[in-house]
Length: 288
Image (cartoon, rainbow, N blue to C red; front, side, top):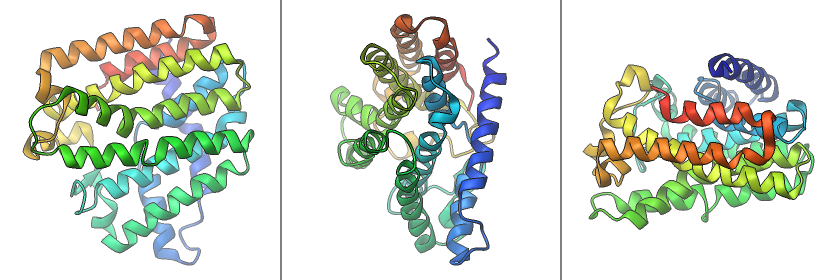
C-alpha cells in the first residue's frame, strides 16, 4: 500500500477534527487558547492518532468510533512536548520546525497550555465509548508509570554511565507507553475481542520501541530542517540513547528487527492490519 497517501488521508482527518474541537483562539482566555492551538496545530507526524484509527479498522471497527480517542491522544502527546521543551526540562527552542511554545509565548503560558491540553484530552474521552476503559488506558500511559515516569528517568540518566536496563525503561515508558495506549484505545473503540486486543498490544510494544530507537538515530543523522527540532542535542546533553549505548549501526539494525517483530504480531488480524504493517516500516525508514 501507499503508506504516504494513507498517512496523508488520516492526518487530514485528524487535523480537521483538532481544529474543530479545540477552543477557538479568540475565546477568553485568548492567549491560553492561542498557545494551545499554536502547539497542537503545528503539524507533525500524528502517529499516535493514526495508529489509533488504524487499530480500530484492523479489528473491524470504524475510524469514526476511534476519532475522539485519537484526538485525545494527540492533545496529551502535545502537552508532553510543550512541557519537555521547557527550560527546566530539555530547554529546546524548536519544535515541529517553529519556536517552542514557551519561546513563542512565555514560560507560564506554555505550562498552562500543557495543563489545559492534558485536561482536555480526558474531557474528550468522557464523550467517547467505552469511556471508562479509554480513560483508564490513557491515564495509565500518561502518569508516573508511563510517560511522566519515563521523562523523570530520562532526566535522571543524563551524564550517567551507560545502562541498558535504564535505557529500556526510559524508551518503554517515555515513548512506548503512549503508542501502546494508541493501539489499545483504537482496538477498544473498534470493539476488539481479547485475541485482537492481545495482538495489537504485542504490535504496539515492538513499534513503540522501534520508533524511539529510530528517533535516537535521527538525532545523530538528520538535520534540524528535516527533523523540525534540534539535532545532536542528545550527545550534547549526554543523554542515554540507543546510539550512545550500542552505536549507530546496531541501533539501525535493532529498529529494523523491532519493526519486523511488530509486523509478525499482526498475523492474527489478517489483511485488515496491512496499514499497521506499513506504519511499522515507515517508523524505521522515516527521515523526520
